[in-house]
Amino acid sequence: MSDLLERLRGRGWRMTSQRRVVAEVLDGDHVHLTADEVHARAVERLPEISRATVYNALGELVSLGEVIEVSTDGRAKRYDPNAHHPHQHLVCSSCGTVRDVHPTGDPLADLPPTERFGFTVAAAEVTYRGLCPSCS
Ligand SMILES: [Zn+2]
Ligand SMILES: [Zn+2]
Image (cartoon, rainbow, N blue to C red; front, side):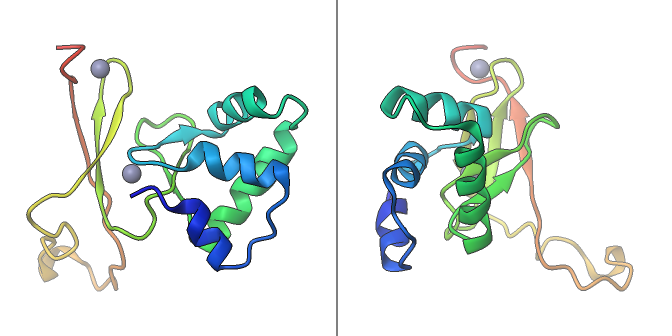
């Protein structure tokens, strides 16, 4: 469900026209954009928006916990508005398409105690890789 704007309104995030555009660009399902991609799309709607404004807004959204940072390909971090529904990622090794996926098991619970080395384990990230239908 694409509800980032609504969540931000509910949290009283100061909504200037520039910040609104950043939130609108990120709103939606299966959105995993790099900061530069967010900036490029924001400029289409609001030509004067600066890269610094976009980066600052992204940082705030991450601090609020309404957007999560994911690095699926070892390159630029991507920003994902699907912050409240635990999910993993399916990534095309060729074109980089990213989908949100929900494994039937719990990756966190799947790590046996003997493999935890005394750690208190808080989170698990799994990236499934392969070729999407257009690339295979
Ligand atoms: Zn692909
Ligand atoms: Zn995601």
